[in-house]
Length: 173
Image 1: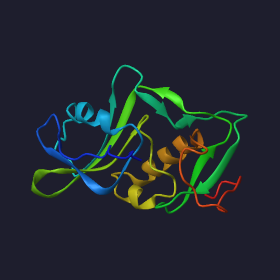
Image 2: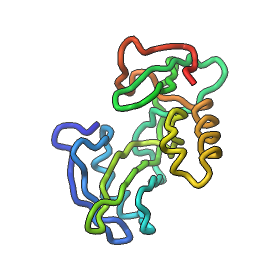
Image 3: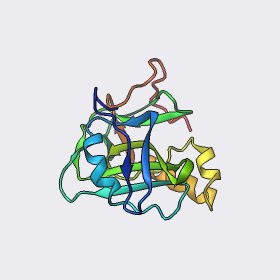
Image 4: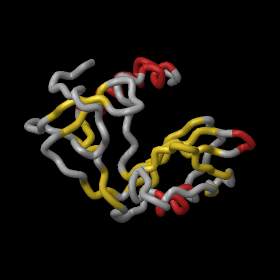
């Protein structure tokens, strides 16, 4: 989330549309300073909702979503404002990253609203997000891709708030 005084509003996409921050957007720490440059590289294509990954070509921070391998200690827990469990890895640390992921939604008057921005690579929706899959051209493919992604990736434990008592080592799906 943003630090004190870090939240801003009013940026412009490369395609000319204005981007506004929303109340309660989910900006991760250190991201606001990167937004003007990243948004200036994005063409909206007139989409109503879209996810863009912008590569800066140099390290800009650390990603907390990492690839997992045999031997990693995996746990699942529920996060606030999520409908299901998230996959976490206990024995890993954030990794250097050169990319910023930005999620935008069309608003009124040709503007876009910033939903979230974080350092990392474009992830798939979490496997419990059936509403998202149903909005895709091929819902079954979207769900399959999400399951494949989240079976080989996880968030670093401690990087996100979780509800105590929801932790489990058994995959809840």
